[in-house]
Image (cartoon, rainbow, N blue to C red; front, side):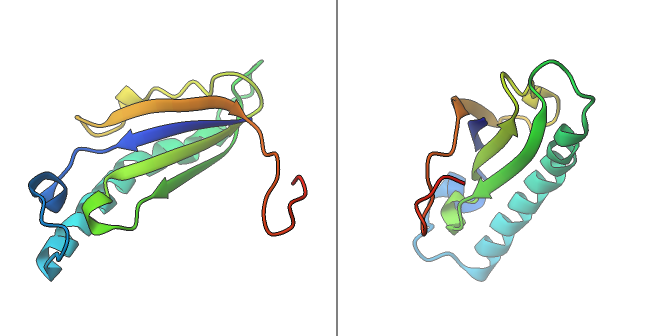
Length: 121
């Protein structure tokens, strides 16, 4: 089963001030530094989830973090957590940067099909 979270890190630079249509090299560098700081903060915690001791439910098999590739939205992410069954029990408040909003998009999704191929994985 896959649990999906939307993560919005606090906006910085052009995310907060606008002007993302034609960012300067300095603005792009600032956005990339903010993204790297976010990744540095969360990566050890996400990497540790599959290593937790086995329990009756909520065992994490895989964690995937997707991020926007548009400079004015580098603070927006989707987190896909593959879990055996139930809640993956992630205490986001203990490690995400202050001001980060985490929203549960949905839980217990399963792969129905994929393309190319269309067959169930």
